[in-house]
Image 1 (cartoon, rainbow, N blue to C red):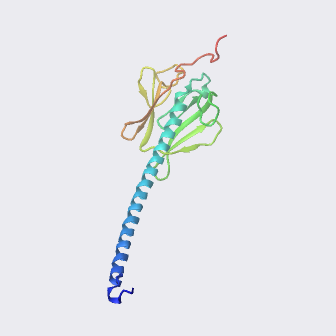
Image 2 (cartoon, rainbow, N blue to C red; image 1 turned 90 degrees about the vertical axis):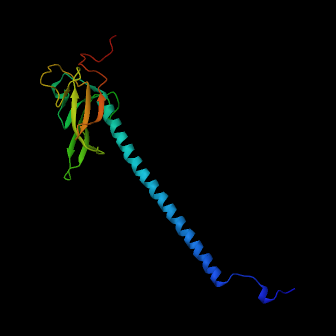
Image 3 (tube, rainbow, N blue to C red; image 1 turned 135 degrees about the horizontal axis):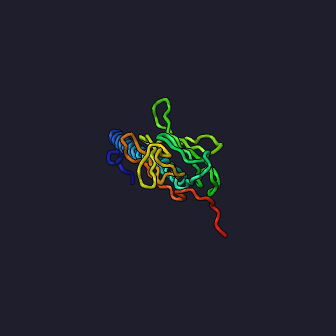
Length: 194
C-alpha cells in the first residue's frame, strides 16, 4: 500500500537548520569547556613543576649543609658572608656520598635584578639552581644560637662550622633553616678506633 505524498512525514529545511544550529551550539559549548579544563590542568602542572623544583632545591641545599664538617686546614675551613658560604660537606651533589668535598652556595643577581642561586663543588662549574622568591642573605648560628652575618664570627676563635644556617628574604623572614648535624666541632681523627 502506497502512502499519499501529503501524508509522508519528513524534516523540512527549517527543521534541519534548527537541528544543525543546536548541534553547532552544543559543540561550541563542549569545546569551550574542554579548553577551560585543559587550561586549568596546564596551570596546575606549571605550579606543580615550580613546587617540585623548589623542593628539589631545598633538598639539595639541606643535605649538603647538614653534612658540613669542620676542617682544621685553613684552606678548607668553613667561611661565609651574607651572599655566599664555602665549606666541606660529606653530601656533595655530584660525587659519591661520604666523600669530603669543598662546596659553595652563592646568591647573586642577574642583569634584571633576579636572584640567582648557584652551587659549586671543588673543581667543577657552577650549577644554576631555580631561583627563590626574595632570597636575600645567609645567616649563621653559633652553638649558643646567636646569629651572625658572616662566619667565623670575630669573637669566636674555635674552628667550628655553624650549628645552623638560615636563608632570609628581603623582609627578613626565614625562607630556609638547616641544622648542621654531623660534627659541630673539629674531630682530630674521623676513623673508628680499633
